[in-house]
Length: 254
Image 1 (cartoon, rainbow, N blue to C red):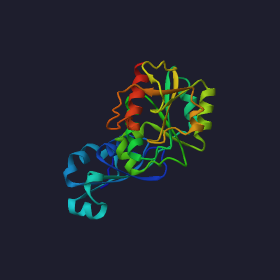
Image 2 (image 1 turned 30 degrees about the horizontal axis):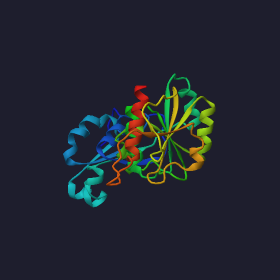
Image 3 (image 1 turned 90 degrees about the vertical axis):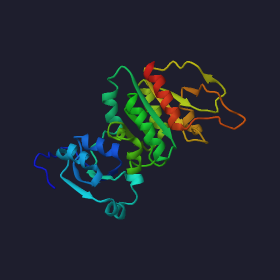
Image 4 (image 1 turned 90 degrees about the horizontal axis):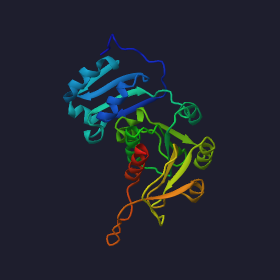
């Protein structure tokens, strides 16, 4: 059903599918997007009423129809948005604005490929005022529907920069005043107090392998978060999304 008060935003990009309640709500609130259709189960009537001014077409499906077309509601939560992506800055464009800030933190993720982890990290970025995540384009997922869902809306505001060479990008950032901190659970020394630079890059590697040596060499400091390891049960490290959340919090309160 068409809505007379629908307004098309100016910045649009490639077509996307987004599912999950929080991810879809955030996308509908993003005025930079141009939405095509909202497909929902009948129990989401209230949501449709609240967001009808944001969308051109709303299609209601009963649960049987929805499951036949889109599978179990376990992943989609009974809500799918067909939309256009919005124009996003590249890293160089972003830094022109970000460098005006007195304080700035960015994340560099080295070979972290799980969309669930990256989505969770995005949520922490949104809450702790980190505006950008940098990944190597050959070793990281795209902004997929599952990543959008895991980010719970944070993908609308946290920039996701896919670069050709992560090591080189960290090196270039350091030339503009950033200090790079590599977080490595195999480091022998715990870090009780981290004296963050006002402009910091927090670098994390994949679980198990950690940060690659060539990327680690670009880090100005290597840090292990303080924790009590359980050697008997071999519980000796945090999930990377949890570690990133702690590091972002420490920077946020510094």
